[in-house]
Length: 221
Image 1 (spheres, rainbow, N blue to C red):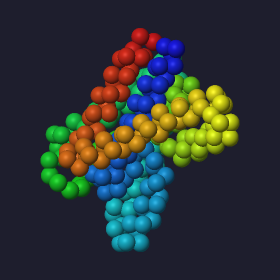
Image 2 (tube, rainbow, N blue to C red):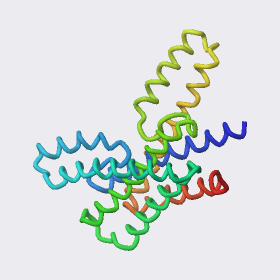
Image 3 (cartoon, helix red, strand yellow):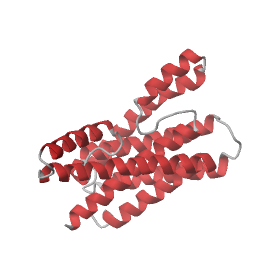
Image 4 (cartoon, rainbow, N blue to C red):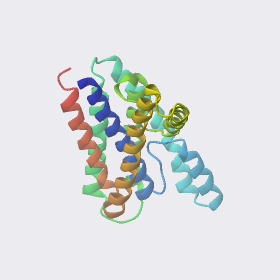
């Protein structure tokens, strides 16, 4: 039961962090997705035909940053028996990105430093994606991309309805998917509200949350 509670909390936290960071960078940095990096293909194509070429090409930069991050995450995982070390590194990068924003990004609008901060967030989300692939049993499912979770939840809902909600496996799976999807949605809402008021500096908040998560669950491993 204790392990299930830990997985529940980690799943909720990581999905909320992903939704939060994705929305913060989208709202405050020229519509860049930091977690759903494939969404940047669409924004790239849209801005390219609209004539915003500089902002468009920056979107493509997220892909090599993301790939390098996942590779680094894999190397970190090989050197430690503690899966939460990845979340600690992710949290430190997000905290640093927020602090850089607080200190240096005081002028409204985008500049090169804004994009550096965004790429730091993309790097952090790459580590979270690596964590989800390497340590799948630590969460209820993928925490950064919701399409698969919504698909699974829909299948579970269909099975539950067909069995008059007597299929305990489907109900349990639906509950788990609900934790992740709900966490992501809450993160998106919180990210939109805080980013509108304070910009990229609010990235330090999920950084603090992930560091606390490490200290609570993985520091003794």
